[in-house]
Length: 88
Image (cartoon, rainbow, N blue to C red; front, side, top):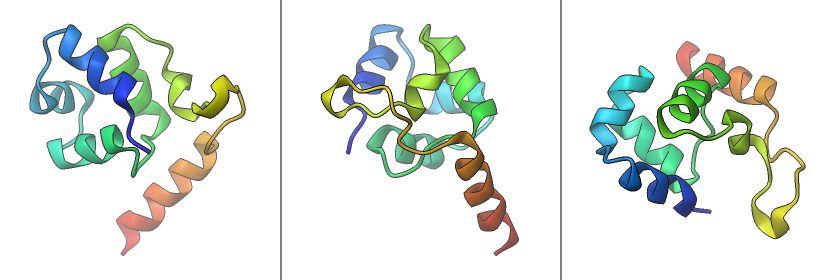
C-alpha cells in the first residue's frame, strides 16, 4: 500500500527523498520504504517527517482505507519491530 499522499506532500514542499530522509535522521532507502508503505516509521521519525511536511505525524498509524481512524500499526509495535531489526 503506497502512501501517495506522502509523495504528494513531499513534492509540493519541494523536498527530494534524500533531503527529507536526512532531515528526519534516516537513510534514503528507509524513507523510500516508508513512502512505499512497506515500513511504518518509528514515532520519533514520524514526528520529524510530519513537522517537515506539515501534517499530524499520527497519520502514519491511521488506516487510510475507507478514511477510518483505526491504527494500522501501533507505535509500540513499530518500535519493537525496529529494535528486533537492530539486533539482527
